[in-house]
Image (tube, rainbow, N blue to C red; front, side):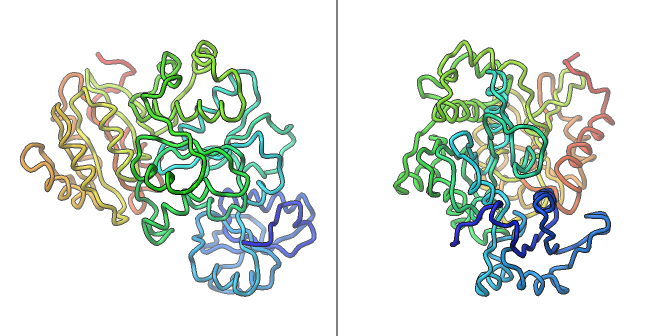
Length: 446
């Protein structure tokens, strides 16, 4: 990926912006502020993408236009392993991501990048919330914030906490001194091409030039195996570590051991970055107050009678569904699973269901729900009932008919929402609407 390139180096370059989602639009805005008019290319341009601006389709003249540029800035959703990327690089055209260009331009001692299969958004949000409550100005970037290179009239914050996806990491040419990995399990195989390449891309964050400390989940076997042999300095975090437990985590109000680990990783990141207040339990407990959990991440949407309905729609693979089941291990659970099929192995979810001591009902929904159900049945046999539903409405109605006092109806699909819903938010809304058909949702049990 040589030579090193930053945003400031592109003022007079011929630049192609490939992909016009949130990041592509931010890149266009920054280039415009610099007086640079880039070539705009998108796989599927829409009339509403950028009104009044010409956008070339990738397959109809777009790639040829990019081949005439000095540099191409691609969106994260465009896989680095696509043949078009290889063709551009064979032609000597650097293909970069906006985040990587930004990291080459800014002081890194007040930046941290947090990645992981799951938990990175919550960990990022906790770290930023605590920093702000401690009196610093902290901003989040990445999937739960704005691209940090988006032009702004506001002063630079004291800290940037960047949620960094596996789509972004391969495009980085350096990293901040402190990074974190919250978890590791198979995901995004269509983008990366294989499990091992997904793992390698994700964990390459820890070996980028400039990184000196990697904070990581010490309970994750896949992480332990790979980072222990990477030669990087790793600080392992789990729920048994002294200094990373206590009332401050309770003040966050998040369910489950996995969220306790997310919080512990956030605190470890702040300590590694030199935030001295993070070492004081009383200050951390006060700073944790007022934290609001992120939408569709094990978030209660209300009760019908004494049954709680929990939206975990952002559960798009096995790991978060397992964590959600563990978070409600002391309650009866009706688990709703299914969505877009990415070819994942669901046997581990079957083992998580089998480990439960309290009543469990598994209800599958299209498209890959029946495949998930079959994998679970192979593990649990007749010990747990697994039923197939035609749609989410039917699944919720079945769950309502089965649920008992103090129980939970848990939407933790272990699969993306593609094909059936616009995104996980639309799936969450559909879940809430389906629950409302069963009764009146209230904030507390009645």
